Length: 123
Image (cartoon, rainbow, N blue to C red; front, side, top):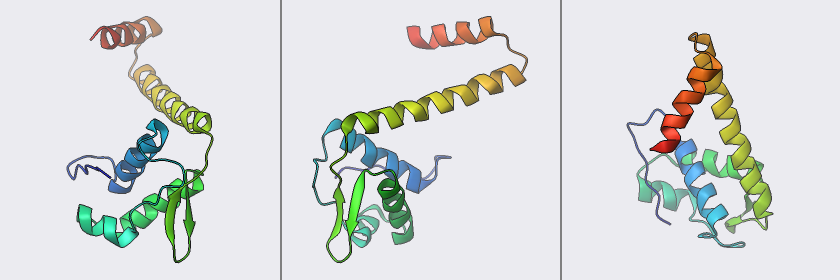
């Protein structure tokens, strides 16, 4: 599993780990039933706290993307790929809504926001 942690990012490490594993599951890079690295193994490999990896695995399990079997490890769940994609889309919509709200609080009007989105999409 190829995971890159950015220690200078404002995004917590457990969220970076979660997002990268989630993307691997959605893309099919991690197949259904595949065993994930152990908490201690992954924490050692990434040189991060085992508690951070455990938190990421717990959140992925809450989202239904992995299943942990005591004594055996954590496995990619037999999830509906469409459900995972929809959850990711909802996340993006929520983030976008927060940015739009922030722009409105800064006094921007809809046409200004549209113009920014248009510029970003053209790049």
